[in-house]
Image (tube, rainbow, N blue to C red; front, side, top):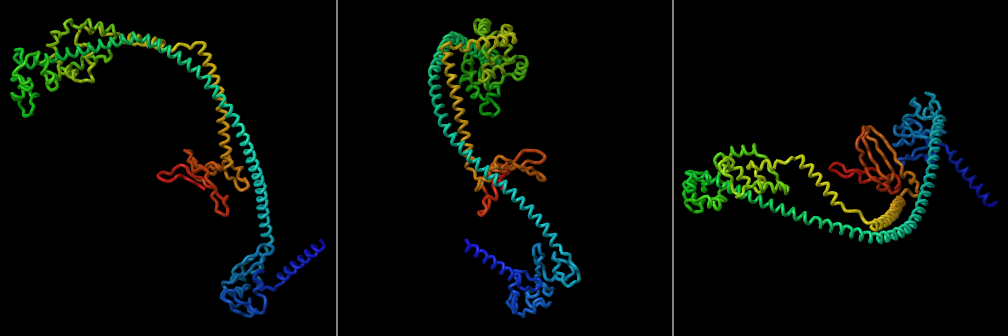
Length: 540
């Protein structure tokens, strides 16, 4: 120990000796302590080119060196440097051309030594100011370091807590999954007799329902078939009526036959469109005959010409009919109405005598109805038969009320009857098993969600000592002239107009973005909202 103390004292003595030796070197004016060794001796070598001059030529107010290194304390060289010691403030260099220029450049006034001006020494004041700044900065650093230590401790504590919680949740999950699997098996076991009982009940109800619906369906089918037959009969009657009207119009001399000269009078039979109807063209429409009677005309000729034949006065008659006639229903009448309409049909199923005469004025409209498949149901009701008008004039409001009543009765009948007490008990047992299983399944999913969140947290890089973990969950805002920026570390960044509007996502947490030597100096947030016709936004 005594030998160690002796060595220590020797080292201290040598250090003090060397320090005094350096400070004891005679330095020319304007030379810093670090450059003092270059000005020791009898000769001086210029810094730039190594030119040697006698030491007495240093600071002789004459520039011997190109770089001005021989005149640090005078203004002889324009490119020389004068060193201000500025004790206890920090030393600094000024251009040697400013020496003795009547302006105090050094805080200690050493640059104005010729007495032209007396400079106040402000170095103590400047030193006190910088010391105060340094002290304030030191305190800030000290406070920041304390906060950093707290953040480090907090980061380590949080990670340890999360690791412990993760271990606990993993164990709990295994037990919860086992319990859920047992409850699932119980649920499925309870659901088997429940399903069998419900299926049996529903099958019995469907069988009863179908049994009740058989006569109803048969009656409806019978009614619809009768209605279709009636419509087909009415269509044939109208077609025969239209053929009779056309035959009467074409039979100009009313001799009960239509011959080819009478056909030649109608331009619509001009096949080659040369402006006239030839004998051959007329006979072609008469099935290569010279004349035809009503029966042959109706059966063979009328189906071929009804698309092109234009009766006289058809346009006026069509307009009159459209204004005066009501639109027929597309639905078949009720069985009662159907029977009434059947009673109103002429017994011989033929044409009323007045229909042939009156039908000449409405021929074209009836012909169009027959040819249009989409409007086939328009002749469901014989509107032209005045005897049937009263029978089909049903009170619409009464029909609607009756329809609603029937629908309500059908709805009640279609309701499935209640389950038996035994089935209800099976359903209740299955419901309880499902409830217990759902609760257990929800507990498992909650634990899995918490585990996933902890695992994601543990994967985050919060710094070498977890010092940045305290920023997780915090958000900071900054407002400039146009936008308010929101920064949530390890989460996302966004901007929003100051005047209000939609928030724009600038990016979600990506990774640390600092340089290789200081990785944790910056962060990058990526995959923000896409720019118009450009890449996704990002920031760092």
